Image 1 (cartoon, rainbow, N blue to C red):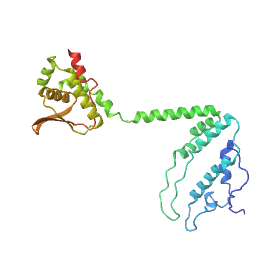
Image 2: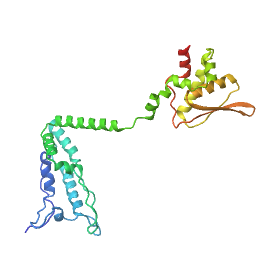
Image 3: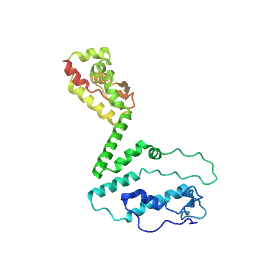
Length: 277
């Protein structure tokens, strides 16, 4: 009866028949009484103290067969090269067994991989055989199509950005933003004698500050009462919190953001007032 031995070192078959390549790497003479190829594989070269499971030894010889394929002369034609690259890509889909527990340890059997289930499905195997019989260009088109579909599916699953939801919310339209301003300040702004240059300068200050540090506190010394009034109105329009206090004999303004991010209205207050006039 033939005994187990190492794989033959003879010439390997070409990539056109990669299944035969894998089988040759595992083609150890199997006794009739044995039920698994893994049991017939020789031990891996490693420390004598460490034992490897049969499944790990099987995977070792599969990987060895793939590495040995680099010794095969490369295909010369462009189509053959393309088919070779496609085949190598598909080989990465082969099931890779997890490192099994040592013999004697109890463990629940691992669930079969998606690739294993696909191989046992006649419909999937029909699709697989149809793919393998196509030219290199057709295979590449199929792979690009599948990659594009996977990206679209992943994009549909992504949550809607907070910025998009915020800007589409009715409370952030220019009209609603203006209604957030107190009635007294709205009456002042509607009189039409607002220095828009001063208002635009304050807008630039707040936009520049909170766009970079949305959770910080903006501080400014402002002795002009009308500028403080404009800043209060602007903060209410932008959904910011403002407060004034005495500091060393002067009036100090502090502005903070009550949200985690800063998203200003699409239409600034200065532009909205120009539309109203």
